[in-house]
Length: 115
Length: 112
Image (cartoon, rainbow over all chains, first blue to last red; front, side):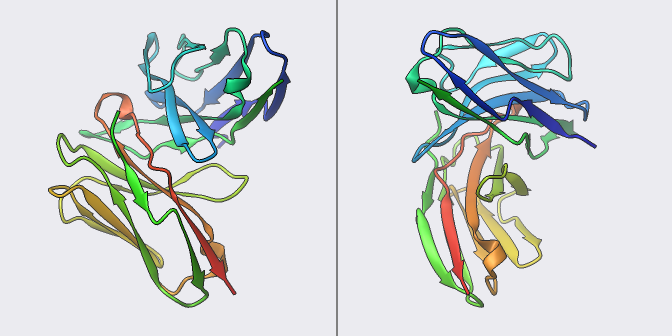
């Protein structure tokens, strides 16, 4: 069972370049999220989705776009990379059981450096 | 944006000793409180999802309690082992989309 898969694991970008971080889950989870992790800041929510076709902003959405065309995939697009976007990015998924959400299942992370 | 505080930020524990640390969060509109264990170079893994005031959860030597009325949760590690060395994150969850707001974490280092 693959769980949540993120690609690539490492990426170096030049300022101004664009790229897409991929996230796929094979657990049929409704909810998917993107977080970034910076030293001393903990995990901060960028964007999230409650199902295919539905996305919304998190705490730090500026400079990122998302879409959710299928239940499985939730790509994160950097429109014009900036050094401030150097971070480790985590994708997570979860589902609703009864009236409660489950724990989040995290991917392995993507370490992005913008030079 | 919820204000979630974890204390202490880090602690060193001697192998075999027990320890505990705190997660504080807004008590209003409480939905759920998550605890995650995060080892270096790995991804966070869930320990507990707690929803009821007074709830206690246990997983091996790790347990947690929850007070939703005053907005805090304690995580306990009994008889710490070197493999318990990790950062422990707490996160209140909100209903819509299971959005999590993470605290800064408590980094635990267990010395043999």
